[in-house]
Structures are given as C-alpha cells and as structure tokens.
Image 1 (tube, one colour):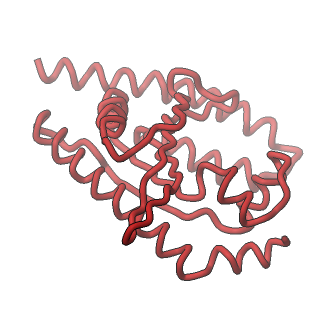
Image 2 (image 1 turned 60 degrees about the vertical axis):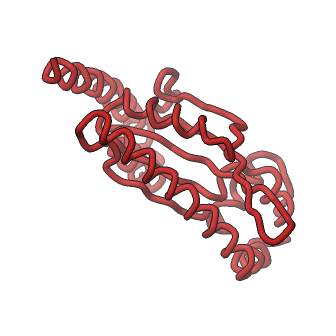
Length: 205
C-alpha cells in the first residue's frame, strides 16, 4: 500500500469518528483529573491539553523505520501513537500526579510507560509517555483503540518545539552543532524545572 492509499483509508469517516470519540473520552477524563488536582492543591495544574491524529506520511515513515510494510493493518496494529494527547503543566511533580490518576481509570489498560524525564533520550528530550488501550463500545460490540498520552512541563514542551523546528529543518552541515546545543539546554531546563518545583514548595509552607 502506498502513502496515497493509506491516506485514503485514514480519511474514511468511520476511522475518524472512532478516533474522535476516543479523544473526547480521554479529554473528559483529563478535565476531571485537572479539577480534582486543582481543587486539592488550590492552583492551576494543566496549562493546556492538545491532541492530534498522526497523518499518513508520518505513519508511513514510522512503519518503514520499524521495518514494517506500509499497510493500514500494520499502522493500526503495530503503532501506539496514531492518536496522541499532550498534557502540559507547570511542575514536574504534577506530571506524576496526573499519570497516577490516569492509571487508576478502570476502563484504561496501561500497555507501556516510558519515562523520558527520569531517563531523557540522548537528544535531551524529556517527557512522560503513557500508552493505553481505551475501549470503544457501540451496541453490543467492544473494540479497543490505542492512545499515547504525553505529559510534560511548559519548559519541556518549549524545548521539544524548538528541537522539532531546528533539527528537522536544519542544514545538515550545521545539525550536529544545533543538536549539541539543544542537549545542553535540556540539562538547563531540567535544572530549572527542579528549582521551580522547589520554589513552589517553599512558597506553600
């Protein structure tokens, strides 16, 4: 299957409707979690929640990278992040509070957890990734949809945005210099995140 045919399959109304329904379910859960934590701590927890459905070209690139043929079936079965939800908050400890409450949802099945905050990628990328199977029920049929939820601070999100803009479009001759600088900045962002969290805790005493 070429990318054009894959794009046609991904554009079918039933496929998009199912993905949209799952996104709505998760965003509702996140609103409830945000309300619970904001009420408990008397401060804003989530700064923003974003979602996306991966497009055909991105899916094709990832399938090739993983060694799979470009087919709709492989995309649906082998990839965990066709649906992506990103949650951005101010403080590192809030990330883990949100994650704990997500994992307590009885209708969510945790498939994988990847903690790139405690163990950043070589590039310096930091975020907590949770992969869930979420049920979709219609009439007497139940199927699951796989979703990746990314949790990060504002600073981590800023770094990731700069990394995406620079390293995916940079002149190859200058790429190594940019990558090294970004890795150094990631260390600084991690240090700042920890300091901001300590500042908040001291202010709450």
